[in-house]
Length: 88
Image 1 (tube, helix red, strand yellow):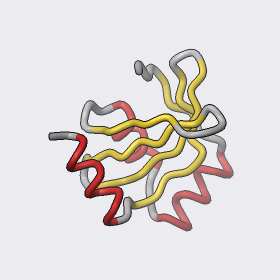
Image 2: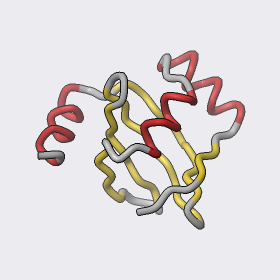
Image 3: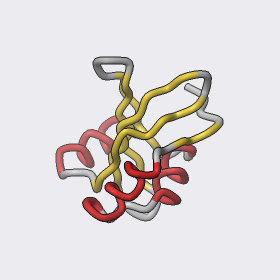
Image 4: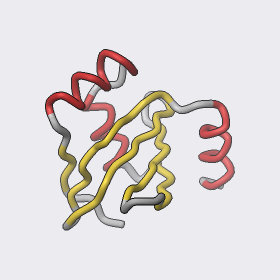
């Protein structure tokens, strides 16, 4: 999967920042990084678990190499464990 651009709606960006304390710069850096585990979910969405400064989980949709962020939040313990198992 090749992601060239990351987009997010203004209201979603605000919600993620205030509810989950995750900045857009952190999301962007994580999703463009090689240090991520991505899996396809239902409804043409993807989930990425990434580690840059900390572990975060990102839900997004892809269209023409553009990732549209749906939500992002700090990863739970089971998500971190999944990331560690898959990245070995």
